[in-house]
Amino acid sequence: MYLRMGDLIYVPAHITLMEFDETKDAVDPEKTYIGTSPVKYHNLDKPTKVLLLADDGTQDWLPVLYNGEKMYINKKDVLPYQEGE
Image 1 (cartoon, helix red, strand yellow):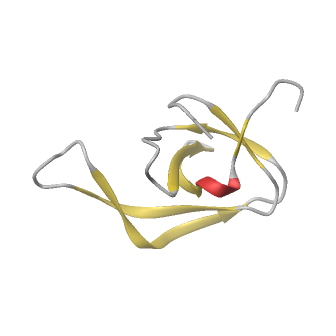
Image 2: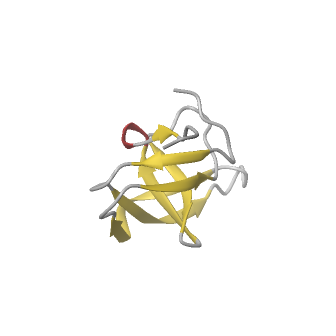
């Protein structure tokens, strides 16, 4: 599945969004690494839509905007949003 920054993503119910500590690469400040343990999480009780903040095609966790917060979702848990859903 190919996603682009700014895409609206459909997230089914009973999926968990995670917030991780982020670390900038000292050599290349364009790269950001996320920590291994979440610092905060949010379980979704019902399906929702989130905004994709980035996807370079190599990461398992995607940064998304949910209720004004930057959270991460596992790539296998999302679907591209389609009109009529």
